[in-house]
Image (cartoon, rainbow, N blue to C red):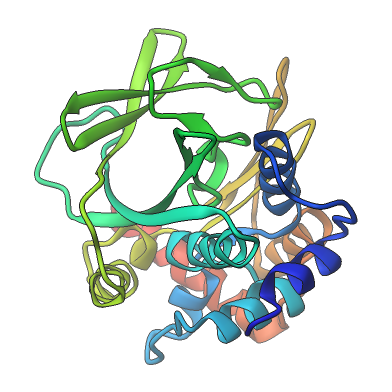
Length: 272
């Protein structure tokens, strides 16, 4: 898809050239506020392997607005930035959430080198996605939605992305700058969407990072998070889930899809 950059910008409603760090930040915010992070495809189609071909990602995320998770969102953003002329490199990380351990590399992100500075772009980390480029030099970045992030270098090739919590900075994930190929992402995507221990095979996750609030659905609880408030809504039935998906995430699911998702998550929660 040779015209992916212009087509993506047009359909996202971005009508000015993307040439600077500020332009990329605006692009990241627009993407996160419009296209949902979710694992619906993983849960609804266990017998199907999700495509990571760029044409299929463009159709799923942008045209049909069905969203996706990191291997989908961040590959699409990588391809868009590449076609717009930026120097980009795909990377792989280990999701930690403050807990050290033997975690697999299951998170795709993008390094953008602009004006001699390396920065991280990540539109695929759900409600914790930074809404701005995060520089590799350790500089703290306050995102428009209130989150404060920094990247800490732990050795010549390894880094942590950290987010400020009430108790201090917490490591969200580690990543390195070695070269990965599409085969590496296919393997990681297979694990994330098929392995019984993978989070996305077990929990229902849907989120949007809007300018004034974050919407985060986890299993059968919707959290609405503003800078000065937090609201929780419990989902009590399949029709309730269908309404939440439509009203909050602008995602239309069939009665049958919602019933399957609801029944599955009730059973999963009961088994924990």
